[in-house]
Image (cartoon, rainbow, N blue to C red; front, side):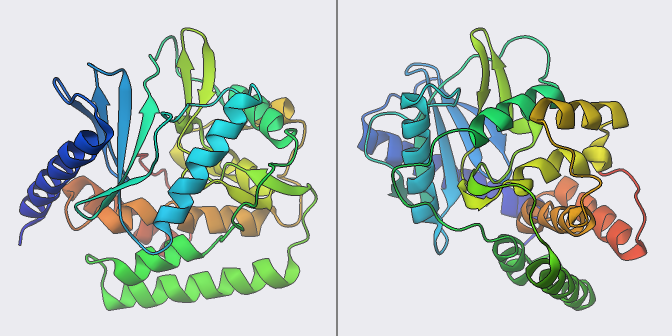
Length: 298
């Protein structure tokens, strides 16, 4: 089956799951618009003022999405600026997908700056402990599962990626000593998950929320030179957060880990998306060559 045909079939499956899940939730799908289709399929229901997120069902995914809904409800009650889930029972299972429902937030103004994300993460990390148990951060699990499941990955590349993960895991677990406290983290804190609304900034996409080392939330921006962030932007982020990791001895390991973690979505989508397939090849060539050529964000 061609990449285009794979993408078309998945789109049809998403549409069927969307209709079924929204029917169960009593939501009107008239005028529905696809906002994004990559790691998740994201739809806007203009008749309801709701955003619907569809994730492929996978082991552990239901619990992770349940946690994201629970955490964001709690954070919103504490006054933290987060997107808010609808007050319905969720996630909903439909046609091989897990579906969550969120209040739609209008985007406004310029794209948020890294310094604004730094201030937001400082606020998040200063929140009191959540009054319920959080899952433990799993730094290698998602990318290892994506490597094993990837359908457009040669045996040589797969073996290299698994070796690289093993090398970094050994260093991470045996040698990295964290400087910041352990606690609630967003888990995928890049500025693409910070949105500007008419009423201010909101942090979104909480699928990876967990308990872990706070350094985990800082590394995506510091590694963002791959995606065009300047030294000034990265320094502004560190000042706004109040801590600079770049001189920390664990920084190179965490940076290299993040580079592997950014492969997760392209590994999962390369077989159905020619752009993702090209970007996967580009990033793999760069990693295997050990260079710092720019990457294209998704």
